[in-house]
Picture 1 (tube, rainbow, N blue to C red):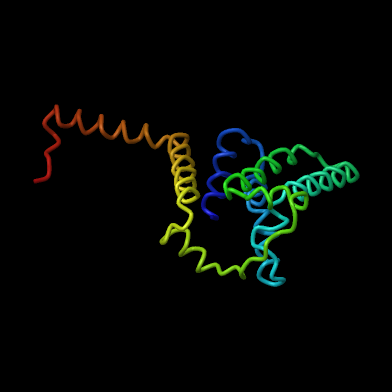
Picture 2: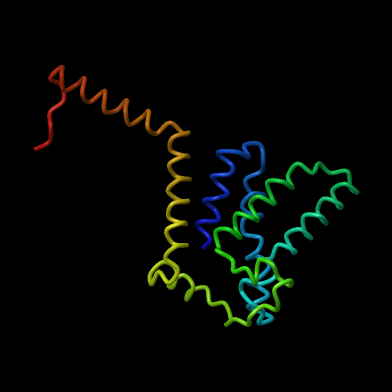
Length: 176
């Protein structure tokens, strides 16, 4: 779901794509859904459809590279964008029929996307437990990395050391 994709974008920004725009990383990490969910809602196409296929990723990347080359725009953002798009596909556990569309046949029709139903299925009923725990891990990792980089552990250790020093000097008294 969406929190996992945001967490992966955050991890990417904090770990390997420091110089890249965070908004680019987020948009690239949710691009398959930005393509497929509206197509499902308005056209009745599968919710995990062509936007979740490798051929569309390659086509979009080649088109973006050609357009940037033609307009003399720096193409350094393309690699992080492709990595984030692939992270979306990996996190969604895309079926081979979807990932290798159209080479493995047509996409199966799917019911219309219902946001609230998907939230319930994912977070409450846990219909997709592997994806739920993968998302939980990604969110925890992103928050942990953010906390570590922002110095929160140093603040906690300093606070505990200050409490211990005050206790040793007799200043600090436990609440009872």
